[in-house]
Image 1 (cartoon, helix red, strand yellow):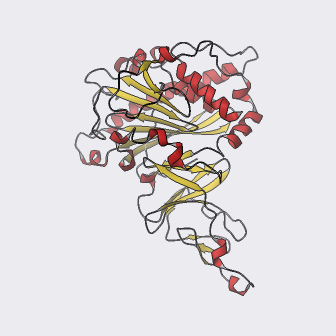
Image 2: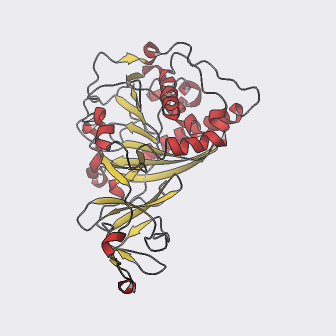
Image 3: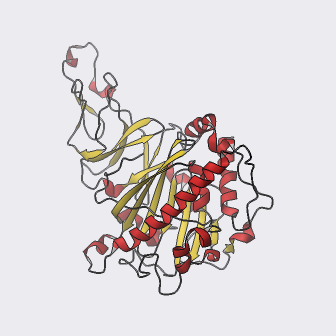
Length: 396
């Protein structure tokens, strides 16, 4: 998990409620897209109670999913200068993500090779080298050991044998992913089916405007299920419903680790408090009356608007508690324009997020009851059902 306050500008939270299935491009929606109801798996039901309350299942999730999958930890705009770094925590492992003097981004375990001391305590910062606070062992930003006081007196000691332990790190569309599994599939293979799909949004060059963290008293899977449908929108999100009809969802990724699709935006409107666009467009978006929502297993929710990109990171802390980190990204050119009004969208999505997290907490409270039993998904909940299927396949 990335601590708060470690983005150059701070970025906000967003929210999504829709499904997905497969296609190569998103900016132009082909006629083969089908409504959520058309892809519904008959007789699908919600998960049994233990998946939301069991400590043992939570531990299994941390080992099976958060230690063996590619996990979103941030965006390259957080470490713009050579020497910038931030610290992330993935399944109880503290990790340093740093840009070296040649501009390359690395990930290292936050552990000194001498006696295991934590190297970096600050959540983020800038450094010319990484030095242990205990005995001053010093490492280059590429992980190589360059200073070890009095170790030259030790027979056979070679600095080359004591570089920082690297963790699998790779970038996708400017987002930084970590995988604790030494035998992990390369990220470019894992994301192969999404190659070029989101190129119109220029995500690798976007800059953050605000960050908001939400401490939600609910199981992390409830957020994915909530995000992936708008069946609840008329009652929970009256403001959202006015500008983006709940029954307009169409999905293009319907099975597997990547799920989602688009919803329509009413003509001339934007998802802001005023209903007007709040910034310059992020790229050459062909249809300005669509917003795309995708979940990327296991901890990323991606919201693609014509003038901004919203991203959620989900960090489970217990079976009944999840920290959600929400960031809002804009095109760099937007920041210098007089029509740049990010707060217009920030307020809209903070309101919408808060509404969602509240109903997720209500769900958690009800699921914990002795009378809870799995209920049937509606025809507008095919994507939550697909998410459950993939989750179970990865757990078992």
